[in-house]
Length: 360
Image (tube, rainbow, N blue to C red; front, side):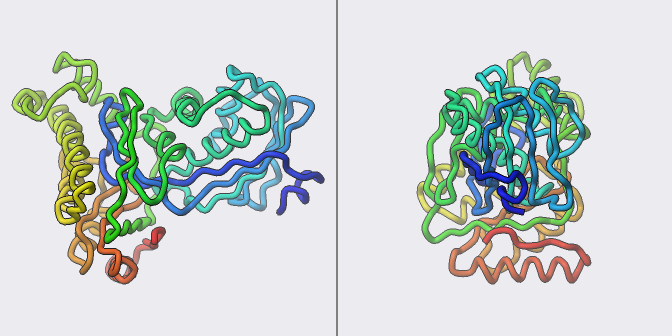
């Protein structure tokens, strides 16, 4: 349904944001480390119109059979549904001066549960529309910080800052090299001869609760035992200390320390257009996520193992928080479309799975 069909008037504000794929730097953001995401050509779009009362009405084209959901500003309560990300943002933005309600229509091509930051794309797109409609004084970094609060303080997902920063700042032609401690960033152009392949495994993942929260707590315990504020403060020369931690804290910390180093090395490789080295780092990252951080699962491992041997693929890894979601491959641009087709068709034939190509 169009905005006018839903609300009998036209929208006056608009916001968009892309989904993101993380090239490398997984579970480093909530440890104060480095990440290297890029935007994908799938977007979330929000159209809205302010109201003269405190009522919020919001409808999503991803759930077309559900009528607009309603609530009042100040009465936000977690419902365990997608509308929590809308409620969370209005709850957070009350401190920025949001005082009036609105009608909103949401449309998105970022798939849910694929590890590509559908929730962050919604937060940033809606935040931009609200910023436009109500003249809220927030730059894109501040908006990302507010979006993270939606998830940590309202939804209850103990995430880092990467997703919101990527959806707010990244583009599809470069990788966003982000220091999650200082929030300083730079853009690293993707080599012209390269392409990214993103494949949804068909296994849905969620951030809120579960093993993701356990991993974060394990990292905090490891940092405390190493007498540092965050695992970012442990260098690669200190791996002997890391390996001396009790199981499984030694492996959790080893992943974070070595992953931070891999991000820095990947930046150098991309700047040098060294796709072979960057691909090797992708594979090393996946092995670390599988063995040390233990966030991969059998269907993902099978997909990675198949993809790594397909012609034109330099490297491939699980992307996102893990326990399902998507894989990202670095490939030769001239061979990427065929490689993506071969990977998905071969994987689905062998496992009767429902993997699908999302990018390209």
